[in-house]
Length: 163
Image 1: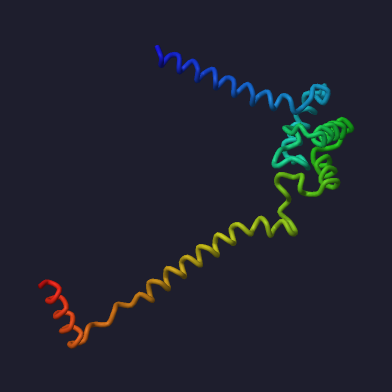
Image 2 (image 1 turned 135 degrees about the horizontal axis):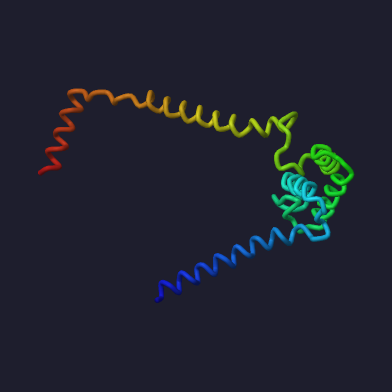
């Protein structure tokens, strides 16, 4: 009986969380922003997914509730109804706000440094680790053998310790 109640509670909690998540997405794009043409609305949502909100941390304009995101969503829809291509709309927003608004900046110019920095740093770290381990292996030379006097002294100390 308790197991069945626990399963029901878990299912209800899961449904409640799912409703909250879906409601968040529904609240971000306001009804007055939705275009009548489903094809244009689909394109607007795709563009909204690749443009970052200028004031939010890591949210696209389609999911953000910030006023600037609403303005950008309206701007994107306005440009699409005027006949602009997706690339033209993205270029216009990028020209106004810079490449920061793109979730995936173009791999050219100074951005190439950012694209290559991670892999280059990983290779340098691997090379450094390899050199460190290699040097450590060669530096660990076996200790020199004991001389006859040292051996006799060691034997004497061991005998004294046993007694």
